[in-house]
Image (cartoon, rainbow, N blue to C red; front, side, top):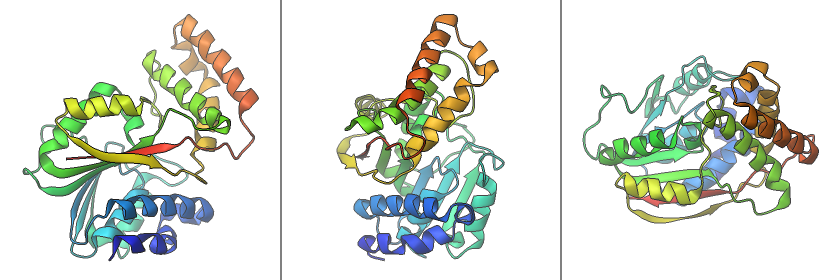
Length: 284
């Protein structure tokens, strides 16, 4: 397949996802975004790809389509198969495994790449991909160690994440929502939410250098139409209404968080909160 053909395959790929049964429009939007992203990377048919933080396989499906029947995607996530709602990781990955893309994918859920028992030969993969997963890590140290761990395994890195620098005022609700969630984690109120360690693009570039990667490209990523702003606002407000999580915060931090969530309620729309911009970085 020519990489530029990927966006045209988005509807078929989205229909094969388990989550499409619950929210077909949402799934199609998310898949189209990832198809456009991977099309720009130019991953050739027959390539081998290591995907970290695969989650329910939204990016995995697009990568498997890109590498074709002669390629292979090893998709890893530390989360247990029972994680996720309304569709769990196990349910979603099982659907993909049973479908036409299944023979191209090796899902490894509940797997930590920092576990010494997991290893791959040097240059075992043409590409390693981290897409919208790095804020899920427990700490910046864990991000750096993971980037260093996979460095010998792959020739090229493709990294995509949300950008903490908004480009318009209607992205401020998404920004505030992720920063508040990060404060809970940083202050020791640990949970299993999606946003645990939000960090800037500048910090990512420093981490890559420390991990032995050489950055050679990147740029802004269009996030128009993505629903993640609404999802993170809702997640933040749920978190701020959880007594146990609030009680675990030091009082000065708790008071700050409560004021910030008051502000979030005042600026967030009932729905349609515009997602933050995103960025991509390539390295070798």
